[in-house]
Length: 443
Ligand SMILES: Cc1cc2nc3c(=O)[nH]c(=O)nc-3n(C[C@H](O)[C@H](O)[C@H](O)COP(=O)(O)OP(=O)(O)OC[C@H]3O[C@@H](n4cnc5c(N)ncnc54)[C@H](O)[C@@H]3O)c2cc1C
Image (cartoon, rainbow, N blue to C red; front, side, top):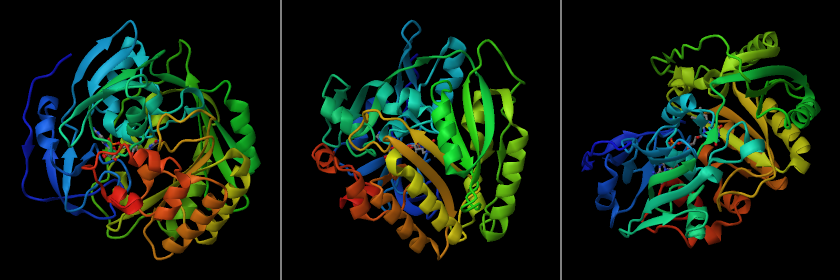
């Protein structure tokens, strides 16, 4: 499948751009890329960073007062081999489009994050994970080849067996090794859009750990929601799913709603947190037992409310996503949840999940053996002190934070969590620079 050719143009006027956390909207010189044959001309000799759909929460996809190459126009599928499941596409293709097109053909992406509104290039640059990490690992494990254009003007093809060092730096490489233009992906056989889903309420962290251990062999997707206001009496809902063999559920209409405006203050606050979490838990408990559900509402529960990030008001919000080794996870997670509840902060959707012990696909990949905790926080004066406390806990446990969700981690903490940074730096494209790279790497 080859699409029509289009143009590359530069809008000379600066435009405000924000990422998913909406913490600011600094001016950017935005260049829309729409034709992969013209990318070299747009990139050569310049300095900037690629921007997919801006679903990263912080500054990984931003370059305040500098150049941003928007890739969403690079949206063509180039070829597909029905027999092998090999798909070649441009880097701006959105994951939702691949799934919707491929599932009826008996194939699907192996890894999808918690939103489908992510480009292939963005999924590679953050080496994203899904709810099935224990089965298939991260997105980068399913990339068989990619094409990069560097700011030197060079076009480089790489893959697991061709220039593997550069390939490993590009997987999870935050867009800093060059602009990914074209990608070959190995899809996974799919049995269709339906999942058998079970929701199991649990109490205490030990409840979470025993459900994780018990579920991983038989359930492809596992994730749990926790009530982060419940403190030491932790409660949550463990959700597990697997392909529904030859069964189909109620028709999924895929209706979208949109948050129509940004409220003047965050609707997520001390007053709303407890009642929302209590209601979510009670509603979730009613869903216990096995149901057959379409994959979209299960895997992407937030995608049905477009622009839900506006609920946090004009000051935006942070996400804090950590991973700590399994051996330290019980104590570290307990301490983090106690600190969060003690600060009166937290989110509607706090997520806890285990990662399997697999070799990382990229030099800077986030996912590692252990337990990951992710929470959103409205912007408040109490946050810096709370984040420092959480950093101390994660660092002492030998863990790290996820750059895709980060807008504030200190540089020394990043360096401690990502020991391959020096090897990565040697492979960087010196022209690629983002707000995050300057904050965490110095350039
Ligand atoms: C609701 C929600 C749920 C999420 N759930 C998960 C989850 O479960 N698991 C998970 O891992 N992540 C999750 N994320 C994070 C998201 O998957 C990543 O931030 C992803 O990278 C966003 O992709 P994007 O296309 O929007 O890229 P952007 O956010 O625009 O960019 C991300 C990075 O990719 C680089 N990049 C983009 N395109 C290219 C290219 N063509 N060449 C080189 N570099 C490029 C950018 O420079 C930047 O460093 C979630 C985000 C949201 C909003």
